[in-house]
Amino acid sequence: MSFNDWLPLLVLSTSLFAAFIIFGLREWQHRWREAINLFAAVAKIVLVAYMGWGVAEGIEYETRFQLTPELAFVLRADSLTIAFAGLSSLLWLCTTIYAIGYLEDSPNRSRFFGFFSFCVASTLGVALAGNLFTFLVFYEILTLSTYPLVVHRGTEKALRAGRTYVAYALAGGAVLLIAVAWLHHLVGDLDFIAGGQLVNSAVADDGALIAIFALLIVGLGVKAALVPLHSWLPQAMVAPAPVSALLHAVAVVKAGVFGMVRVVYDLYGVHFASDLGVLEPLAWVAAATIIYGSVQALLQSDLKRRLAYSTVSQVSYVTLGITLFGPLGTIGGVVHLIHQGLMKITLFFCAGNYAETLGVHGVRALDGAGRRMPWTSMAFTVAAFGMIGAPPLAGFISKWYLGQAAVAADMHFMVWVLVVSTVLNAAYFLPIVYRLWFRSQPADWPHERIWGRHETSLWLLLPTLATAFFVIVAGVFAGVAFSPLSWSIFMAEDVYGL
Image 1 (cartoon, rainbow, N blue to C red):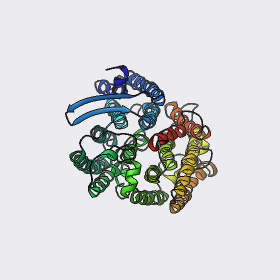
Image 2: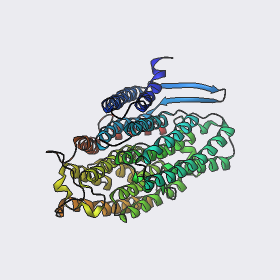
Image 3: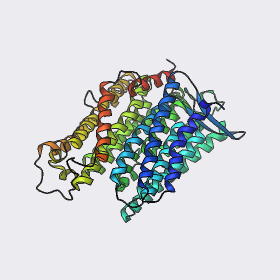
Image 4: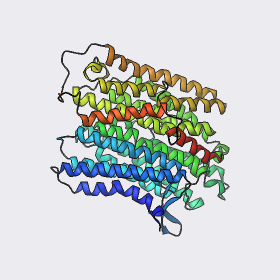
């Protein structure tokens, strides 16, 4: 096997090896733990960037182990892999830096960072999975690796949220397993191939394929937080801020919606899925989730819960994009997969900064926080306006392409879904921005911590400013080579053979 054959496994191994080493470290060996985390994160970014360059040049990267004559373990890099793996790698580095500062002097840090790295390894496995079997393996490992992070604090509330999360995730995994087993029985081992593997299959039973598609969407829809499978997500906000950021921007929620993209484009094929009539019902589920999540976000007084329901809404923009048949929908959906991650991780970093520095958790308690923490509040403002879709930020690019896709697909009602959602986005974000900058701050904050001449720890502030900067750059420089938009266009050309 050549280096190109081993590269996908090497990318996966960086965080996997880091996890096992960190598990063996003692609590007082924090310097080693930080160094291993940061080295693995940087190494992963370099390897994914190199692999992305190769994919753009038409080089193939695939690691394949034939387990049985009919079943293979496959890791492969394609344009969609690079989009998700690149996002995961970049935000893992940012979240690692943030978590080092957030968990300073906290107990059980080796356990936390071990599972943290294991979680990222699982996420990269989902991104690199070259067939349905490999995807299922890493998708279930992701559940097991994120549970300890959700319950890390060990409180009754955290344990209860963990039980809810595991119950939902395992139920979704069981449904997904049934679908995979059924499809394997009909077709055999299925690789993910641009244009769809099932297009060339000999299965003539459209009813069975429609039923399997529904089961796949239900199984994936749990992690993707589709309504009514979303209830676990707001409860999981009891987890530490770095975990919340990871769940919403990189790992669990994105794994679910990423799986839907794989099913539609690389398993069924978008043309075949459209012919089966399964895309339009999924579009309506996505539309309902977008509106429901936005309405629920508007009703939340806790900042992290408001952001959680915002995720329920915003992630379904990706699902909506893949159901709007045509290149514009693909571009809008895939670019939002990346843009939403950048914006949402910034918002959760900011929420963690307010909580750790001021002891503030509720929206109403943020009055005047912009004067006490101007850099954090500027980052929050940038990400919030990005979520609303204000130009020239990243969120505007996503909504622009999704709106064009809805018109091109002659689904004008979906344009109104986007408009209503945008209005609701403004309704639950702008009052926060107003409180930050235009309300007087209280005489005393609930639990204020002083960080010298800085508004908060630099471990917390620098990643927050970096991701806010990415939100601006992804929008302003959307047209340059290797931007999220350019890469999404590149992927859409693969999907539709343009």
